[in-house]
Length: 277
Image 1: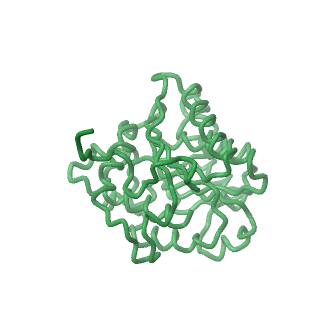
Image 2: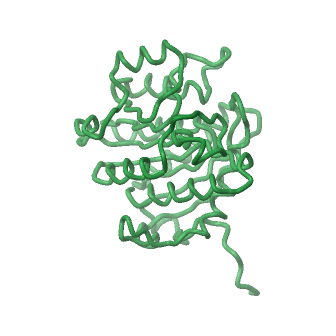
Image 3: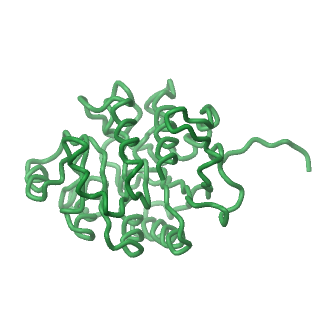
């Protein structure tokens, strides 16, 4: 065979699914985007950008090759059919969990979290979702559509119980959503608020618009007054001692940032998440 050939998989990925503890899946879906579409292009661009990363993290003193993860590539979705797209994600997530591996999704819009959590909940009863986001995502529906990135946490709360959602970085939403957050005490104001869930299984969902638009302009719904990268990185490091059984990183829309800095930042966030899984 001629070569060598450039890899289009994530830097440090194992070559064999069976050898991995973590399976990364690309989720190129933005079918319910309500403002700026384009997050479907994120998984491929993130993979290419990963080759600009160092494979060593001085924060965690680990190489990616020590993580034992497998990049399975991108799922193919039936364009225009939201439910079938979600079914494809759920089927693949269930397979990963049935093989006693951890799931890592890279999206894509935030609705892709719903089927992954469904599969995770069937594997792990004692489940809490830690949700980083600028937006509440707790609407009953968006323009009459219950399956929406704006209602993803509402649907998840109906599955795992709203008391089992913990939200960080929220700064935008309807009054009714904030009232729901207050009712179930979902908003996390400091790390001590998470200590009570140390005995729980954790699904970690990071919508990258939790970061300030000055850090990541390349997202579908930018919201001022967000976290800086260092603040998010410190949260992720704090979670390394929690029992995280699944995760996703969503809502990068790379084409809104021609400098590609947004993509570089999200690539490093994903490396951080791999280090704590």
